[in-house]
Image 1: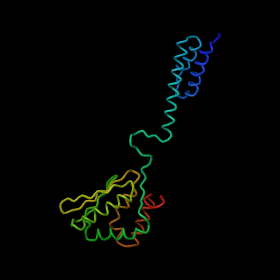
Image 2: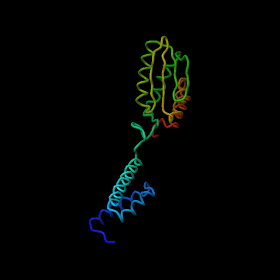
Image 3: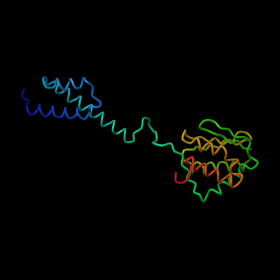
Image 4: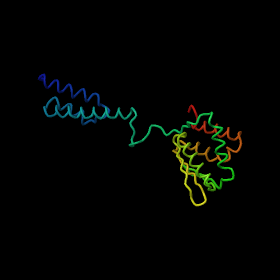
Length: 198
């Protein structure tokens, strides 16, 4: 059987596309390539099939280089603390003062925790200030301060990867009461990937 130059070029392009797209071709695609030897329409079909399959492979390889399944999804949910070592003693003192005589209760649930404090204008203002600072320095953790009657509620939430960080924050009202416990608090946050260099 003698092929014209034009037909030979078309067949070559289709065959190349099919070869590159082997992982996504079925047996039907192979049969189509065989038909291409005997029918001009079969030749055109295999070229289209091969090109489509090649496009699918290229698109799939792009996903493998960092694309995600969900819009807006991030590649990491890690929790990272930006508070420098030099600022930790002051932050410890600030929380120690905030909780001094003010802690009513604390609650822990999956992915969240809550501090409940007695409300005073000064404590509310300080809670909002500290929550704003924590929001900026502790990536992945969300801090919300809500006044409810005579109470201040700190609503603290985080992703699944922040479980150990939330555990450490749950203990914070007691951990900041003396310097030794505070040092253990910061060490536990570092170990939970919520510390410098993590």
